[in-house]
Length: 292
Image (cartoon, rainbow, N blue to C red; front, side):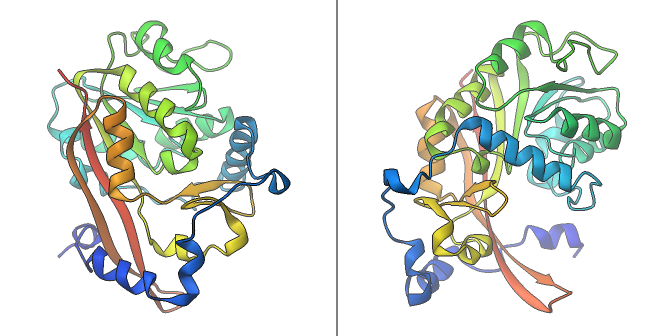
């Protein structure tokens, strides 16, 4: 079995992991209700969220921190089998680790990318070296996302296009790729963000989703003082992460009109070779369709 295939195998049952975590006293604080108080000042502004991620990508600008997500074409084969010149919007593209395998897997596909940082977009463009990637400096939370993609095209701050083509998603896109992006958005702002994704899709278009799942190893490593909400945490660098259960994902996407096609936990054991430690990773995999 290839390494890529192993990456997606069901190495353990999520329900078994859930029972282990919920019966372990040392993890009880992850399960407690969260009450925000004014004295804690835990709510940060959208601009601060954006700045934290800009700093994060600046620190990892070499691209070595991110591995190319080659598994995407196995998880979402529609990206390979779709018709010629289908359009994909990659939301929160980072350094392009999701864009690259899509372009390699289907040379006839057109990929558009957005992120909160112009520096990140430029770095992604350098890494991808592709004329079929567009970029616009925007936040997932900005209302301009849908109108720009459908009507005006995708450009950088100066208004210049980053590709030879300038048709730019007029009429909507066939796919929205939302890969490890939604978890970085505050929970109360997730629904508006998903609505923006819904608005740029063509009728019948697909949203491809993958993000952190409940009781993932990363969640369990957060200390109690890092909680900023129920199942929501903030790292020391100011970036945040939410950990999804299936019901939360289902409610979020159904709430804006999506039809659920696939939704499941992906439970994988991986090995940290440097530390010789086995890690239990949990992700949520989903496919959602805009009604035709």
